[in-house]
Length: 102
Image (cartoon, rainbow, N blue to C red; front, side, top):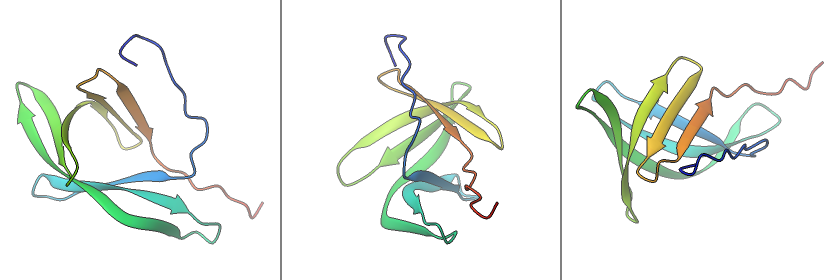
């Protein structure tokens, strides 16, 4: 958080799915994993565009209700770390499904 405190989300029944196209645009939506390996979604997505500005990679979101910017602090194949205007940092980790067959 902006004040230096840390909030850990130990469990969440939804997954943030983020997809980026070659045109530097993308979307993020919430998916809910189902035990059969599929996902449920409300199909409500947040569209964003990507811009490189002053040596920063920024994601600009726009919905019918709001618009905001997040700056990418780190991106690897397994993690994405962003910061918003309130100085809240979010760390996304690659989704790994639970194997219930063992």
